[in-house]
Length: 424
Image (tube, helix red, strand yellow):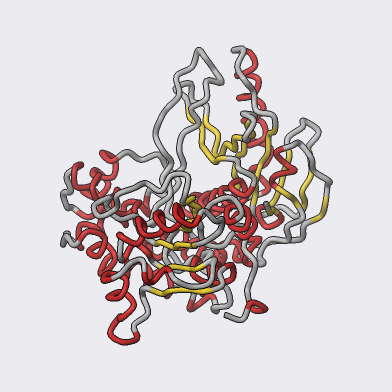
């Protein structure tokens, strides 16, 4: 690759750090999110299992002699290792024998069954999760506000520029796929559509060689799109498919399909915040449902930018998904974790970021600037309730918004930051 053409990714720093600590790393994530391109930037030699030359000769060679394909200058990239699962043990064995750091970079767009893999690789192979581009990585956020600094309570007020509703809908529709960044908006829906088609028609079968009901998988994916950014249960999804499409899918089948979608990195749900911050209040334990990128939900719903503007409820949920995708990417860069919060006293927080030292920050996500006051009041009320119950209150309150032209701290202490001004 021409390294001068490489567009930096936030994960680059962590890749370099991990290569200096571990014998090998495995970069996992959805197809087409940039794993191979980024890994190629950090490697000195590579072996591409998906290379079609010679009737996929590389794959055959890897199956015949996994250890042979590991020979080469290090760090050596083994792309899509899961196509030949014994490569995992071959890498682990080579790392044990050579005892050097940064020997291999594996990439994978699916988590295979453990069949054929003898060892977990713990201590030898470190896993990193890569995602589609955040707005900062794609050049659609000015990066005037650092999430890391914000979580420390630091923010210098700054004008961030006007952002209109059509621009927000375009960013959601286009998604964070590197191959889509320069695509005209009217063509941007093609890539997520093809992505879904590739997953349904090819990848799901290849993950374990079992043929499944494509029609039912499509129905479930559409239901997930209708329930994007919600805590819909499997039972709710079953009822939604029945009510919308007049088809029955039993909950066991739904569970199996969801597991497969997750193993293909098509889904990345937002776990509930489980810390005991309010001892007298029971917390809900449902995950918030998300696709790897909100553009996939758009593709399934046939939601173009024009249609989204005429359906503000759906737009609000997809905007929340966009923000939480970016918050996860930024938080991961400084070892923080993204959650959501719900309790049985009607307390709810869109996004919770827990720092490595246990402190946590509460974020409400609102599309319009006219919703900021209400969101701030909600955050303050919940904080006061937690303190009244002798709980551990959030150290930072913040409203992430779409249509605001400034980042600032309100007189009540709540921060306001446009998503198009945020970075890691």
